[in-house]
Each structure stands twice: as structure tokens, then as C-alpha cells.
Amino acid sequence: MTEVIQGVTGDPTVYVNGEFLPLSKASISVLDRGFIFGDGIYEVVPIYHGQPFRMQEHLERLDRSLSKLEITPPMDGQSRSDLVKQLIAKGSDKGCAMVYIQVTRGVAKRDHAFPVPPVKPTVFAMLAPMTPPGTEQRSNGLSAISIADDRWLHCDIKSVSLLGNVLAKQAAVKAGVDEVIQFRADYLTEGASCNIWVVKNGAVYAPPKDNLVLEGIRYGLFEELCREQGIAFHLSPIPRADVEVADELMLSSATREILPIVKLDHEDVGTGKPGPVYQQLRRAYDDRIAALASTGQPA
Ligand SMILES: Cc1ncc(COP(=O)(O)O)c(C=O)c1O
Image 1 (cartoon, protein in one colour):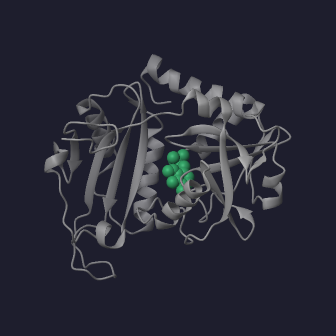
Image 2: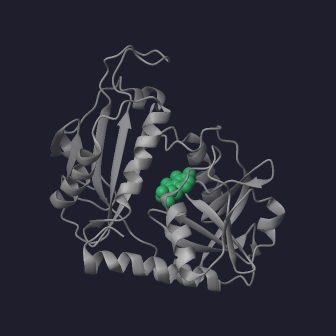
């Protein structure tokens, strides 16, 4: 088989509705509400040195997303973490990877309203390779453009209905930059698939954890790292004008970890180079990843 999951040749084992099977044999119904309506949620758990990173936090967010959609969790907490560990064990990649989990409302006659119970949620999960940011991105930083955030008002749900995010990312591709920074009514929200962090006078700022952003698992992690490093950390609404005069901008996500944004709308951010707060947090993040290898314990 040719490359079916990016970077994976062969026929990797995936999980569908209680069964582990080769990807070539995995299927779901065309009437699945995830396919028909985007009626489902997902999670991405990064794996380093064969160990999940912040798994509990990711699985708790999966539960919160399910609860917001009134989908009954199809697995209990232990089974979900066992699933992640089983996929890691079955995979050949013992380095960097990610476990992708998707849960939809299940298969039902096409009708917008929730189907009458009992309908079993569909669960799909796979291990996929993850390429962490390379030296070039870490040392030289990324570029971004600002765009209006025209997504819906439930961005706190990690929904598979990602059209707004897909269009936002495509706007970055068309502009020849790495990311977009979205603003709603001239206030910072987030990137197309990442959170955005603003540094001013040595302190780190991010938008509040409300319905306008996805609360990245790095929100909690950055708060911890900032406390540990003696860096002031604030969540508050951030007007566009403050972003434009930031000393540093950073993005974060499970797969891109933490990266500096050094150009916004073709202008330098601060000095136009990755700044000291980024460097400090980057080292602290790397230490957490390294700790997974030495302790084998969740970081
Ligand atoms: C829209 C959006 N915001 C923020 C994030 C960052 O979340 P996390 O740090 O949990 O990966 C993501 C990650 O995919 C995202 O898609």
C-alpha cells in the first residue's frame, strides 16, 4: 500500500469501534453523522519516546467536548488511556508520534436533530507520525498574517467541523506565510490550529479560556512553566493594538509545541528574531519532553 497516513507506508493498525484492524480493512458507514454533519469531536495526543505527553489533560478535554455535544462517552477514563497505550504498543514508531482519536454521534438516518437513542457513538483512533518543529523553525521563527475570525461561537469544542479553521489555514498558504492570527471584533482569538501568546515587558499574555478559543492543553502547561520560570502569566482580552506592539509572539499546539512568530503582516515582531521569553519557555518545554524519556512518567 502507498502512503495512507502521512509518513506511513504499509498497512498500520488502527482502532474502529472496539476492534484493532489494518487500515485497509477499516471502514465506517457513509451515514455516520461525523461524515454527514461533522457531528463529532477529536483529540490529538503527542507521543515522545513512546510515552504520551499530557495524556490525562487531552482525554479530559475529549470528555468536555463530548459533554458539550451531549454525546455519551463511549469509553470510560481507563479504557481511553489503555487505547492510547495499545496503539503506541502496536505501532512501529517509538520516537515522535501522535494518537488521533475521533468520536462521532454515530450512524443514523439523515436528520439534523440528534437521533433517538440508542445510537452508538463511532470511535476511530490511530497512531500517526509526528514531526516536531525543526531547527530552522525553532531558530528563525515563523511568519503570520492577521485575518478576521469568522468562525462560529463554539470554538471551545474540539469539533471535527473544522471548515472555518481549514479556510483560515488556506488563507495562510495563499499568503505564503506559516500561520494566521485571528481577530474577532479587533480582539485576539487564536491561530488556525494553535493558540497565540503575546509577550510584553517580559510577561506572557493569552486570551481568556472562553467560547472564542480552543483551550489548548498548552494553556495549563504554559501557566505551569511560567510559574516555574518566574515569568508573569496573564489571561485577559487582548486588543489588536497590543498584538501589533508585542515584544514577542508565540504559537503553541500539540504538534508544533512552542514556536516564535517573528513576522506579522510582513512587519517584524519586536526585534524580528525569536526573543528571550520564547527561548526560556522553549528550554523548559524541551526539559519536560526529555523528562518523559528518563522517567517514563507523564510530564
Ligand atoms: C483551533 C485550535 N486552537 C488551539 C489549538 C492548540 O491546542 P493543543 O495545545 O491542545 O494542541 C489547536 C490544536 O489543534 C487548535 O486546532
